[in-house]
Length: 235
Image 1: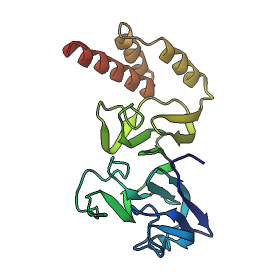
Image 2 (image 1 turned 90 degrees about the vertical axis):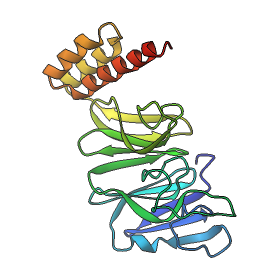
Image 3 (image 1 turned 180 degrees about the vertical axis):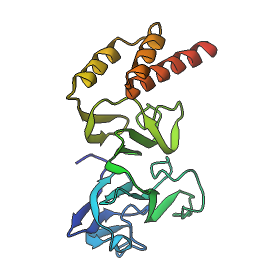
Image 4 (image 1 turned 120 degrees about the vertical axis):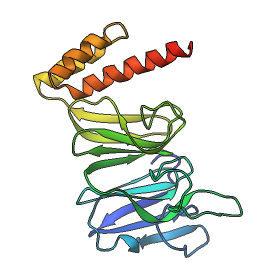
């Protein structure tokens, strides 16, 4: 149990149940039976009839992946961890007279193609069927996306990743992925990635592009952009 997780979500016979703290909608109920918490597991009725394969809990948000690969999210979204953008019509506001962004009913974030989901304290990660990882939410340490921004409001690609994604995990300010690289080509990509630097990134990217090593090519492109931007601003 992570220290920030003061609530739980389980799947039972294709029904989702949540309990614990629900003050910002992370339990997915229209209203709470006891102040700001549920002492006993309570069914998330808005997901009835939807076959859920996987759930994940963050600091104040919850995500669920359906059997068809759709992703639903609910709870607090002040850092972008719901993936539906900044303050807009998706959100319910006003909590204890202080304006916060929250969603107490599950909202569809990604319609299909999702295989795995993981929630950090204030960010979310998914693995798609095409093998790519996307993230969003609080991004001060780069844990959610490759973008140079404090908040990633929408699903953004996380490069790079070689091999089939087996597990995802999110922490307070970091993320982790377990992959299964089993082919010679994938193992070579790993070794090449270890040698990439600003001086050879263009050459490695050219080789990667011609051999179909898309993840490695994206890594080189990101590396060149990173150093180009740093040089441009004198960092």
